[in-house]
Structures are given as structure tokens and as C-alpha cells.
Length: 305
Image (cartoon, rainbow, N blue to C red; front, side, top):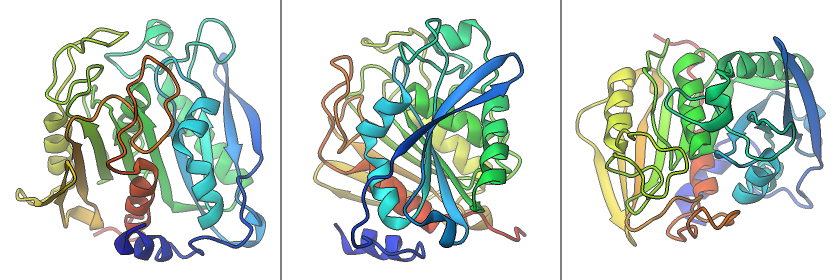
């Protein structure tokens, strides 16, 4: 682990690796939103009730994936148990009524959820309301992440629920909607140049299951630079095939960052490969730890100017 990453995690206000901390037990919960029953997996860190207001991370699975798959793929709950955070894995929608072929309605994509015009924003808003009533959540440290269609969903909640979301980390995703956030949101993007599902430079992905004209990563970067009122010039570094660009400082203490992985495919870098449809994950970086460090450094400004 790098010194910079360790410092950021320690700055989060909780022990970096609490002695004896183990992955928490996963609880499945259900929530009725309008006429639909939605579900999610919930992981609480050890001794959560005595630790004061805790950060919350929403992790949206990819298209055709599942909450349990996203949990295994990212390893996020193991890390969160060590540093003291609540992690929630919401479930998309599918025609079979179980964990098969779940998708999110993110405008240009995907599958059943798009065809059924599922109101994803209403679900996430109701989910946050429910969690905030039940658990000691720090409302200035609510974050979201996701892969692929889940990355699109991550953009969606940042665009539509910017009053609730402090920062996001999008893994191999696409900003696929018209976006006009109500306040700045810190944005981290991790994307490989060899992604054939959601191509880095845009266009129709050769391996995409839901074919549509993908907007390039540059569209998302330029959009969020504009939304967050960031400087034009980036601080850029490169190492082991990864180019890291930072646009900061931006409005209300936010930042926009991009990790461009040379020859990286459509996968969660450093995570587990959950399907043959997905590419082998790059080992150039650990997306879970990088995302967590970014979240640690970018809580929502309590008193924006």
C-alpha cells in the first residue's frame, strides 16, 4: 500500500486496519418503492452503533450482475469493515424476480430496467431515507461507485441526487444522460483503453450486450469539470501503464480525477473476474483502494460557499 493511500485512509478518522476486523455478515433487505419491491444487501462494520456517524458507500452492480456479485468482485466490504463504513449493494431489476440478469435504467441502457422504465432515482432516494433513519450515517460522507451499467447508475445518482452524494467513483462506466447537478460532486473515473463494452473513445462496443452509441470518457471528464468549476489544466503523472490526471481545486472542495489504464479492459481493476463476458481485471491498480482513498479525501462541504 502506498504512503499516500495510507495517509488518506488514516485521515478518514478510523483505524486503517482494526485488529481482528473481519468481513461483516451480509443482510438482505427489501424496500417498496411505488408498485415495485426493491432489494439490497447491507454490510455494517463491527461496533457500528458505538462509532459515531459513519460513511456510507453505495455499490451498483454491472448489467446482468447482482449485489452479491458486486460484493465479491470489489472486495469493498472487507476494506469497509476495517475502516468503519457501511456498504450497501442495491439490486437492479430483472424479469425473473431473482438475481438473474439484473440491469439499471440509465437512459441509453440497459435491458429489462430500461424497457420497463424503472424509476431508479426514486429507489435510491427512498433507500437513502430508509438507511439514514435506521443507522448513524454521516450525511456529508455518502458515496457511490459501480462498474459498467452500475457505473452509469453511479453517474445518474450524482446527477440527480447531488444534494445527497458527496463523491463518486465510476469504473468502466459512461455518462449516458443529460446532467445538471444541483451542487458540485467529486468524481473519480477509472477506465481502460482496451474496453470493448464501453469504449474509452466512444462508439458502439464490439462486445457490448446492449448496443448503443457510447459517449467517450472525455465527455464525462469535460462535463464534470464544467459542473464542478475546475481549472482547465490537469496535474498529470504516469506509472506502469496508468496515467493519472487531477483537476483541482474545484468548487466546494471537489475534484475530478481520471485513471486511464493502458490496455485495460472492461473489468474492476484489482478485483475478481465474475464472468467470462468481462475481461480479466488489470493489476495496474486496485480500484477499491483507489476509490476509497478518493472518498476519504472528498467529503461533502458542510457549509458550501
